[in-house]
Amino acid sequence: MRDDLAAFLRGGPLGRLLWRPWYDRVSLPLVTSLIFPLSRAWAAADAAAAADEEGRDARAAFLAAVGGGAREDAPSRATLALFARGRRAYLEAEAAFETALFHRTAPESARLRELARERDRRAVQYMGLRTLFGVQQMRARFPAVRFAVEPPEAVAAAEAARLADPLNAFRIPQDAPRLRLSHAVPGDRVERRYLRADGPAEATDLSPGPTRAVALSPAGRAPRAVIVIAHGVCMEEDYWGGYSTLTQWLLDSGCAVLLPEGPWHGRRRPHGRHGGRYGGEVMVARGPAGLVGYFRHHVPELARLIAWARQRWEVSVGLLGISLGALTGQLALAHAGSWPEAARPDAALLVSPTSSVEKTVFKGALTQGIGATDALADHGWTQERIADLRPIFEPPGDAPPALDPARILVALGREDQVVPYKTGVERCEAWGVPRGNRFLRDQGHFALSLGLPAAPAPLERLLALLDG
Image 1 (cartoon, rainbow, N blue to C red):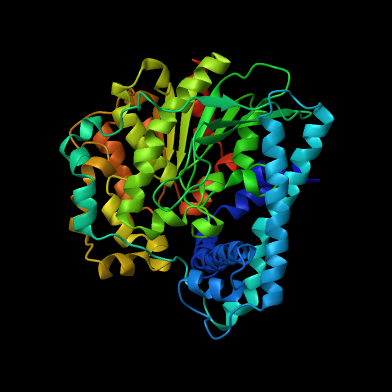
Image 2 (cartoon, rainbow, N blue to C red):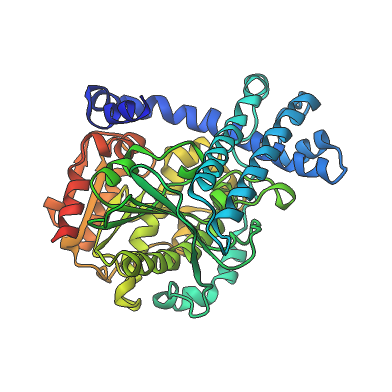
């Protein structure tokens, strides 16, 4: 039934009807006024549960961690206890699964499959505990983000060396920890493995912890190509029970798919006593410092993952960047000339890239809706101050990409209110992306990316480039 529904959404009549401009007009307010605030409460409850384990008052810890709102109507102790039980069940299932995945001796296939099912089930339940705070959100609104914006002077000082030498700002570190591949979780059609780098497992607001990724491939046969997907902000595909219709479309097309967990997302988010953050929040909360940090970590990670995928499967490797992932991907394409050839993608598809991060930050409906624009202004940020960071935010204005523009595809939504459409066109013009490689659609930001499997011409073109 689930596969039938996914196929219906990808290519059936519902899919063609759903991914229209109206979708963003409905979904964007829900994201900014409901999903983000419920996630903030969920993260505060995570911190409260950790406090309770240390013998501190959970309700007081929730109020201290939530970042404002609903202080006179905090969740009951019973609600926080229910959350803590769900959290504990998830953490236990995750730990058992992780231990088996990376144990020196491979467990029996049936045992690993059972641990995977339990971990996946508990992960969905844990993420779904956001609904515990829905009634309170209706009465007294939680903030969307617990901001910790760093002022322009501090960011400029911290990034002075990279700003002075931007062409070397995204080199692959020579001492990067090695990547370890897990045992395989068997499946009828798809084999699932995990990648992790050695290093500290705990993340903080200043450190995302080691590189992590999920590797999916067709069971029992070699893939035609590998697609490395750089995801959007707050996207955590491995935590919501099954994989997206986009990932499934690529798998059904015979590709292997590598799903990196971006800095401060998924297993790399600060949790518990480290601050209680939801996936992606740190990047938004710190303002430009968070975005700079995300790119600093993730762009070289993409290089390493592309090289790893090429070595493992010995086929062409494509880079697919969506929203925030498109901004990360365009930096990767700009700086890949200094990377080993194996670390450069053979073709790329960028969904909602931009030529102006500062316009996206100050004019984008998402950043405005969650209060990020106001928080930045309160700490002295303007479009001009953000533009000062362009050398480490965006591709050099006078330099071509390291990849032949004929092998770069771009998808843009004319109704995009999150990443201004015109700035995406400007990126195409600056790089000389052929007009035949530009897919311009009458869609908003979310409908554009979610609707790709229903109108897959950009994906089909990407695979054609990789096959050639």
